[in-house]
Length: 275
Image 1 (cartoon, rainbow, N blue to C red):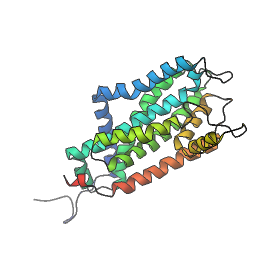
Image 2 (image 1 turned 90 degrees about the vertical axis):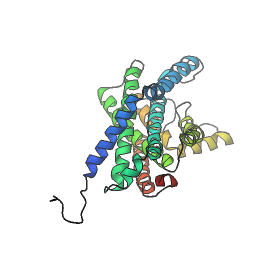
Image 3 (image 1 turned 180 degrees about the vertical axis):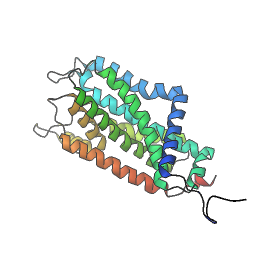
Image 4 (image 1 turned 90 degrees about the horizontal axis):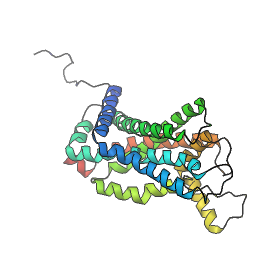
């Protein structure tokens, strides 16, 4: 029986083709699970409607309602929920044996990571764009160029958050543990990103607690995600925010570092891989 490959060599699939197929699999799986679609978008939109309506009267910022201020934070929350939860599939794939098959395949590790990350990024981006279209009813002054820039920026944010979810999910063997990390780590990251309240300004008299809060918020990568989107949506704001250059730089660096970390951790093996 003849073979088209030299003796002793295995057929190696194109890394880009593998990444595309894994990303496609993530998207198909997501839309087959309707509850994930509703949960990822429904909760942030509900927060936006409830908090936007309830806090508009007490929000003190000239020329800007809380509903408008809260739009970038809601988009980042959608990206966070969707991107992070999409990486739960890593735990599911390991328990079902699919991940072990991918790990022993003759493909580079980065190809598998790229496929998972690309799938989660696209899922998060689709839902964030849907909310962006809804939010244009409030943020009506944004231009076509601004919409395009916001989509590019949301893509960068989603890449970083999906890679973060990959790193967190790789060592876990249960979805319960993943949800615990979500509550302890990821929600505080969002709450301390400037999504819900502005970063304390050093030009005002700050208490010790406010100074510590400012430092924590400035060390939080999602702070620059929210601020970058807010600068696209709102040309002028009374709230202090990092510069546009700093926001884009931190977001790109965060995504690059997390992708490198995801690739590195994917080269390690866990007890679950032996199942």
